[in-house]
Length: 97
Image 1 (cartoon, one colour):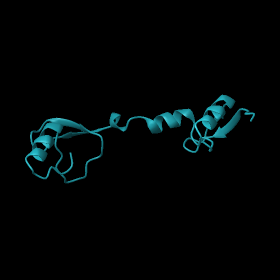
Image 2: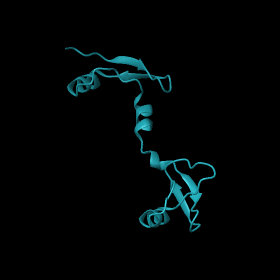
Image 3: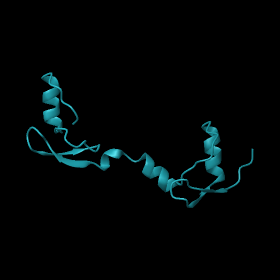
Image 4: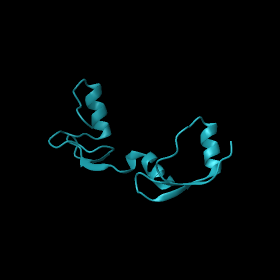
């Protein structure tokens, strides 16, 4: 099958991007049948590790600062890794980290 370069539009940012014949060949070789929906920059951002953006909180038990990989709920205690591990091993309900 002959592949030719295509210009596609990203569903995330709306910008045009080139889907080259080489990329199409590689997609077909991997068994992928659908065209990409996001440009390379938006794909990279989507697949980036999420722990880079964390919430900075104060541990409810020891008072040290901890970085979380999620947004904590209002009114719920949050623990650093050390306090969370101790509470869990002691059989206490650690709740969210």
